[in-house]
Image (cartoon, rainbow, N blue to C red; front, side, top):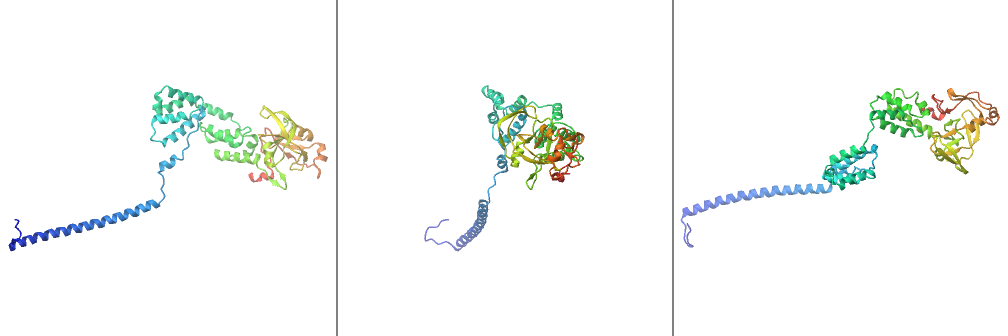
Length: 384
């Protein structure tokens, strides 16, 4: 009941009002305590969040793994319709587009068509012009591209290609690369692969490997062949101004020839001829000789020496070739079965051995069609 101002309440009423006020005060104190506790807890959370934010700001920002890998995938090179390159082109497109998940099928097909050139671009342009359903079906488009332009050789053709494969004038590394590409499509065991690989090497490399391929894997034989090829063709040693190298004796060569790359590497000058000479190259095709070397001193291991000039030709499989003019000048007696010179011409006794008598021992040479291991010069003793 509300009493008018100035009225006096009885004692029981005052006692009741006081009790009510005490209860209200207790409730307020509890609420204030809870609020203080919540404020304190909130302050701790804010502090921890501030520290965490500062740490994240100070630490380097690493891109997502997906984005990092995406930056490493190269865009595929333009494809012009080579059947051998078709599968590789498709694989590169799949790798590149695999990290573009948000692209639609039409966008992916358009991208691949943009990488086509030549006759393949005409094929792709027809799909665009005719609004082919393949423009909206990436998987179907790739399958059609593969069916039209990829014409793989069957296993038999790979085997036939391997049996015909020869090193020729190439380096052993280039030959091994083509061999491994073809042999991957066959089911031959490793001994058969090794035999076919060695059979395709140049005769001089076959001779080097004759006693070293047993018990080795294909990869080890390939490594040996590449190493021997590099040493036989490029490795030289300078000792007091002397250059050591192998020479091929070839009765079918019309002149004495030096590989131009070998001469350039060794610093041997090239002298321009008054007019170029037309010759037949080793592969039967036409060739031209425009330069010769100055006269150099050619010395065999046994002391046979002469002043000689070489014609220069590029891309030869041997550094030096001693041809028919050299054979006529020295008329050596050959033991072809063992690749040896048994005796020199009588004129060589005076002219080519100025410091000592004609040696009695035979001179080993390298010959076309050699099928036996020749003695190894001192600079190659570490390969025995």
